[in-house]
Image (tube, rainbow, N blue to C red; front, side, top):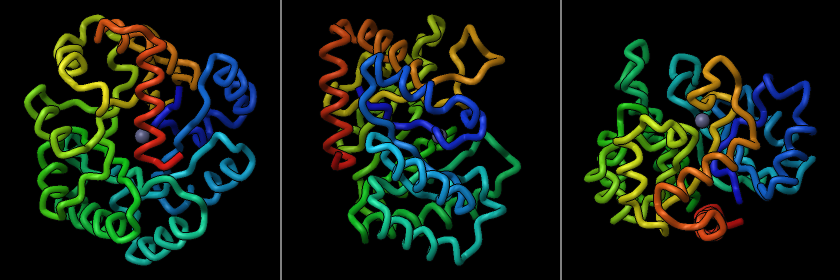
Length: 251
Ligand SMILES: [Zn+2]
């Protein structure tokens, strides 16, 4: 399996990162796509990728930090994407749940990153909290669909339209919650060729461990629940989602 979205650079992993990585590897997780969120974190991710051949870096400017991104950060971003075996531009995108983040600024920064990714022919890793439709409209505007919408939280109908255009959808620990019925319907409806799995660790704890960080290992629970929801074996799910990851990220 490949974790298509994990913040391994997070300082909450500083004390035991190596052990956790080894634990995950032993459980069959063979790759980790690590998206950055701001320029200040780019070097640490590059170091991790240099130290571990199964850690694949992505660089981007996350909407949470919209106030702190500067115009010259786009230049820095382009340099990192160019030099450092980056597999994607991300994490970028829009967050319309957080009303403290100016939407126009978010959209301007996201749009510049779409243009850059298209220019460099790199896939986008996109954050779509409360903004699935707005993100999709921007991708359509630029006719660029080489992208993964991570932690997808849209409707069945949106999922269909978006995957029809070739965008992949990422599902994570939220699927493990037995009460997430709407999300289960979406997972059920998405064709296996358009689906990837993720932990988003440490930010998305399992529903029954709310006060804890989640771990690289938790990808196993995600895989089990997604497989169960789609009524296929974990082996088939692993094989298909790994294939999808390799395709989109060029691994
Ligand atoms: Zn993330």
